Image (cartoon, rainbow, N blue to C red):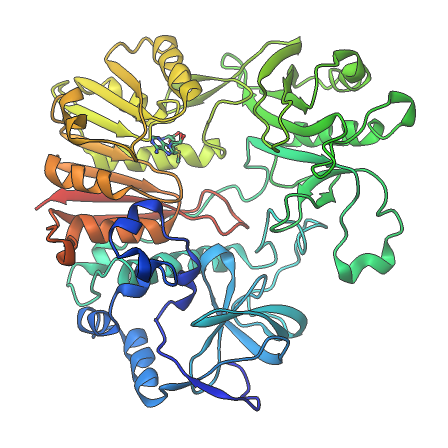
Length: 564
Ligand SMILES: C[S@@+](CC[C@H](N)C(=O)[O-])C[C@H]1O[C@@H](n2cnc3c(N)ncnc32)[C@H](O)[C@@H]1O
């Protein structure tokens, strides 16, 4: 709680999770509400507070929130620039710390504030129902403080919670999902089955070196956080590293990253060791002037399928094709035994993406391999593959359990947002047919390759935009028994939700990397949208959070829905 400062008060109604206003409404939701109302608020804002009260009136946290709102309709509204003493209560969206003003419950969100930490913070931004704060100084550290092993942890855009005990990280993630399921999904804790539905989070056994893919950027200048400027006098030199949080044009120079594999750290160190040598004439790409050659260094780790030994692919993304310039770097890194592939993606566009219009193999082979649930997958520089292979095994096992296939080869599976087909393919041997839909051409091509590689001939992968389906969509495949839906962060488009409600497959396994849009879609599928005369048709049986990415705010969930 913040100690009550001298303030001007403003009349405001508070949503139990006001920071959700910062989730931009996905295009599909614009259809749910009149455009005029969406210009200023998110769809979640339209859930009347009374509705939340009725549905969740035995939730003690909600009750306290609501009581407080009733007593204090005049809530504290801080001024920009104001300095407050705050205590972080929990973690929320994007891993930001949630602090509340004593008495009024007004919410302040602070990046890198951790539960239990008391600190001084300056108000940097005011939104309608909450404000953002920048931490200036810790007064007392949070209760689960641990020393962060990475020297960049306090300012790198990758990890946000390295100095929070891992057990506390997963507790906070689990709590976040629970709150979203209640407040956004409108599932009631009063339901006697609620505790059975809401499963405990599955932690990640390995908390470092778990990522099989990292992308570092080159930049003309090292970025140094303001508070460290005095210690650094080399800010004018070239940078290779990770982006500063929220900035596409600021690169924090890093010599190693504790999330990637050990061999890829050797590659990064080898490149760092020589690329600035002026004799090599290597220049970093400048995203403002568009001059320069080196754009990104992408490192991927797979394994030799026969021996199980790690294999590394190095992908240089450059603004033009000049392989001779890369030769000294190649000579240096090909000496690292795990490096089996050096690729060059040439991207001449002014954009900052790492996918090239042309791709060249500069050394070794053009793909590496990985296994998942007993299948082999070929991974090219740009193909999508789950970035935490070990935890993907856990995730896919959960998906398979939720699918509860009969195993007699009679069932049809619809794999929506199939990517390179990994989920559908891991189920294919036990079903009649898998139909996969995905918008990216290359992913569809990889899915077909993966099917052939694994001798799977009962899977069809089709390119299609699931945000643009029409009434005929369902005539492209037989009625599925099981639908798997694994959308990216914006969740499912309203057209797809309507389609699924009409299709009435027996089971839907919803895999999500964004618990907020997941909770929203579960609400639609289970409770319908009364104001649009859409009835829900599903019952939520389980929601299982899985931690795929320790030290980051990301949360994955596997949800099982059954037809009512
Ligand atoms: C979270 S990934 C899931 C990939 C896959 N299921 C897996 O586990 O590897 C989401 C996938 O949805 C695809 N996607 C995003 N928007 C889409 C759309 N509108 N229509 C179809 N596919 C889309 C992305 O290209 C991406 O491959």
